[in-house]
Structures are given as structure tokens and as C-alpha cells.
Length: 193
Image (cartoon, rainbow, N blue to C red; front, side):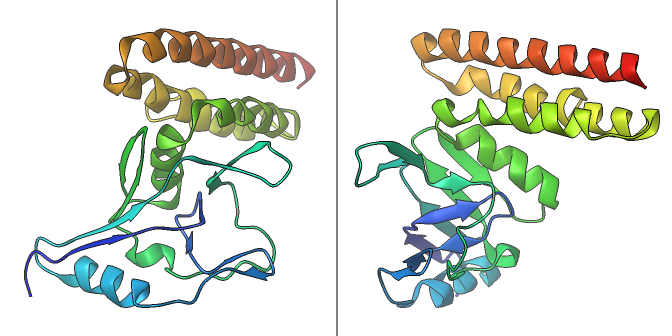
């Protein structure tokens, strides 16, 4: 059938765009149901759209907030929908269209719709990437990943226009701080090499 639309929920989505809707770690929460069938059907349908709709965060038992978009799925988590058929992921911060995108493009799109409080982890990840590079060529590759034309922070800056003006101001300042920190780490590693 053409134009099939499937709307489903999930517990976690990782930056590879794997969707976990059944378990969190080793804890079983739900069954598979028809999610895989509906997402696959929508993906293969001419003009179809498979939507994984999630809140960007959740409250843990201890009262802290966790992100539903995670670098990798928790150990023991069951993959309900493989990354190869995930078309759209939607949060309150936007829509990530993932069909036909590379792994890196998927990660960028998902980070852009993650809760802003969890984006600071990117600074730490980028800084660790710079400090572990062993030569100038590898350093330039890492620089492109974060600061390049299609880099992570560049994409985040492009996404600011979609935000509410009050949030945009706060997020713009946060992204600029991240950019300055990453540029500082880059320069420090260049000096060491």
C-alpha cells in the first residue's frame, strides 16, 4: 500500500539509530508487538513514513533525568528496529529524517533532536578524540567531524533557527562555549604534535 504511516514509541535510540522498545538493559519491559512490521511496512511503502516518537528524556527511579537518545544502547538491550529501516525519529526538539543517511549523518541528526542538557557530552567526547590522535592527519579528521562544514557543532548551529527564541539564545551560547572548548583542545593537541 502507498503512503503507509506508522507511529511508534521507544525506550532508547542510539546514535547508530537502532531502536529499543522492549527492554532497558536486561530488564524486559514490553514485547515486540507489531512495531517492526509496521516500521518495515512504512519504510518500504511508496511515500510511506515510519515515525519513532519519543520524549527526549525520562525520569529515573532516583529522580535524575536520563536521555532517550544515547551513544550506544545499554548492555543487554534488545534491538526492536534495526538502524537500516528507521526512517524518522521525533522528539519535542524536532524531527530527524534518517533514511538513506550515513552512520555519521544519522548521529548528527539525532544529536540535534536530543535534549540540550545532554549535548555537553559532545564536548567531552570531542576533547577525548583530539587527545587520542597520534598525528596531524588524524587530528584534521577529528576537527572536520566536529567543526567542519558538515560537522556536529556546525549542524547544531544550523538547527538553532527551529527553536523558540528564548531557548535559541541559551542554546546558541552553549554551542559557542562548546565550540571554543573544542577549538582550545584542538590547538593544544596541535602544539603537542
